[in-house]
Length: 185
Ligand SMILES: [Fe+2]
Ligand SMILES: [Fe+2]
Image (cartoon, rainbow, N blue to C red; front, side):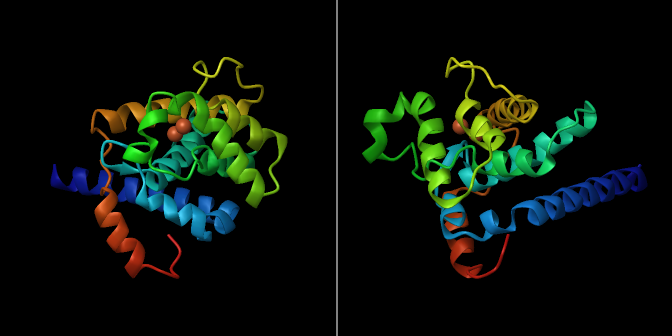
């Protein structure tokens, strides 16, 4: 029984390591950027930071495309997933209280603006960011990559809201962000 459990743990560890390597290979510049690292200071759902949420959505997106044998551009899938919530503020903060209820509608546009200023986005990456809140943002995705990310995002958000995916919270992330400075995730 213990052996079976440790084997399961080992397999999961290997899988996570492989996914993380892949993400690092395709999006090292994003992971290392100061703005992306700053998302460790913002909470998404529950005690999950925006940073952890986006990395998780990227991992789930790869897993979905593999599981369902959906051929797609892995690089655009990963980069779009990492940048899909690049709105760069904490929507729970008092200063954003006025827009809190409308955050769901507005943040894809804000994320797209921010990401466009820093990266040469492809059409697919733009579609992923802009449409990830569908059906809230009425126009549906127009590429497979965007459909995958919107699905992964909904699943992760649900798990985080019900605390089935747990993060380390904002404060701890703040501390670790300061000690990890200069080190890539
Ligand atoms: Fe979002
Ligand atoms: Fe999201």
